[in-house]
Amino acid sequence: MNVKFIINPSSGKQIVQKSLDRIIGRLVLDKIIKEVDIYYTVNEEETFNELKNIPKGMFHLIVAVGGDGTVNQVINGMVKYNIDVPLAILPSGTVNDFANWYKISNDVESFIEMIKNMNTAKIDVGKVGEKYFLNVAAGGMFTDVGYKASSDFKTTFGKYAYYVEGVKEIPKNLFNSIEVEIEYEEKKEKKEIFMFIVSNTPMVGGFKKVAPMAKTDDGLLDVCIIEKCDIKDFVTLFLQVIAGEHINHPKIMYLQSNKIRIAPTSKDEEIILDLDGEKGEKLPATILTIPKAIEVVIP
Image 1 (cartoon, rainbow, N blue to C red):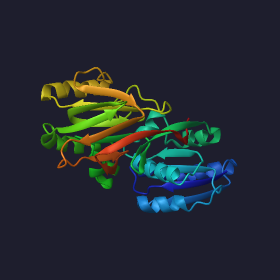
Image 2 (cartoon, rainbow, N blue to C red):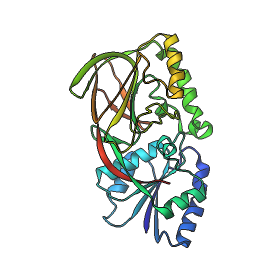
Image 3 (cartoon, rainbow, N blue to C red):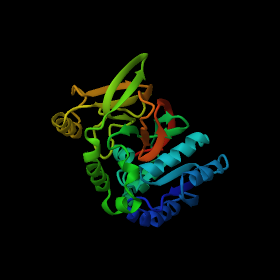
Image 4 (cartoon, rainbow, N blue to C red):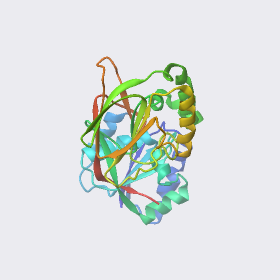
């Protein structure tokens, strides 16, 4: 098996990357891997070019080493350029939502065993404009902390870097709502909201049950919208989100659909999407599912 490793050298827990020599060496010695090619990411454009220039049939597996943002870049390139081989993830980022949901470990022995077994699952991918996401598209309050926190800060403090960045945003965001128009399943509604999350897995931002009904192979995206509320309701709601008991809260709109359009009612309102922790498109946006678009190696 010929394998292409795509590695983010500045991603989260860099200690994982120090285990790569052991992982690759063991897989070569055990005759699981025949040839290896390693590429270190520079930016999204360069990663796309690297994937675009892979000759068809040259590799049998792509391994993304990094966090949710690195995986996002890799799946964008793979879907865009029709690279039809399985994707394995060695999580070394700040939060690793998708990998954590599937219990994909960065432990050396566990990762080697996973590659040896090569169990795979066909996974849905979300699409916004010309960009794709594996786990989440979100907008509004707190949804920009993923790309606002610096790489060094995330490397040092891990997922707590997001929480610190989120706390810093509370004073300016708590009472700032946005009015949006939501279209889905031939319905159209206007809502004044704090934030919206469109998810492919239940896990978002390290919280395990933000979208508790989500499945990665059902052809649907789970949409969780937090409507404007007072601080008392917000605190109660936040605690319910942590417990995964929020979807029946009166200030939550929860739905499943294969396509949703979200647009601000004011042209002066600028809302930027977060796609798997990366800065994405501006609203208005149509978010849809591409069923079983990518094959992922899972334990």
